[in-house]
Length: 180
View 1: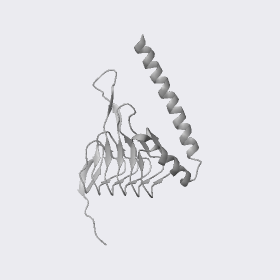
View 2 (view 1 turned 90 degrees about the horizontal axis):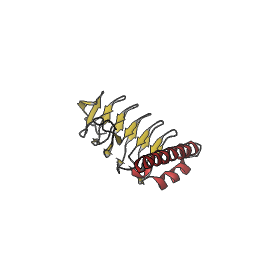
View 3 (view 1 turned 120 degrees about the vertical axis):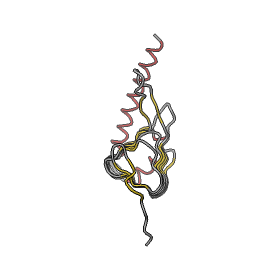
View 4 (view 1 turned 180 degrees about the horizontal axis):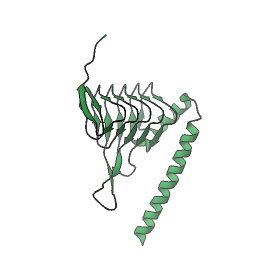
């Protein structure tokens, strides 16, 4: 009986949290960028300088998200960490997210009927560009200078200087940089 009451209480607390979080983002979307940045500075684990977070973005459990300098997060992006499993999303410097990128640091283990929670840290290293509508799943590290093509699903680590595409994302070529 106590187990059922605990489960019910946890579910209700989560629903209340979700309600207020959505209300927070509804309000914050009506504010200018400099005021939004102040709120983000309060709630993120870390946020660097010259960070552009467009409107209509969503972050669940912001205390598990670190954002470096010169990061651009476009409209419609969503970032999910885990509340009870301590998952982090670590975005290094000079990273660009195109519209509607989804990052999931938590999920469920399909091998069990009751689908227990799983999680894994996500690290996106320097100078990465993530294309529109891409999905990055738990436990992934994307190496520096890599590009994730639009509409890709990243399920495994990506080595540095890679261009990946597809579902699941596979390396299609090496990124060779030209110096100006």
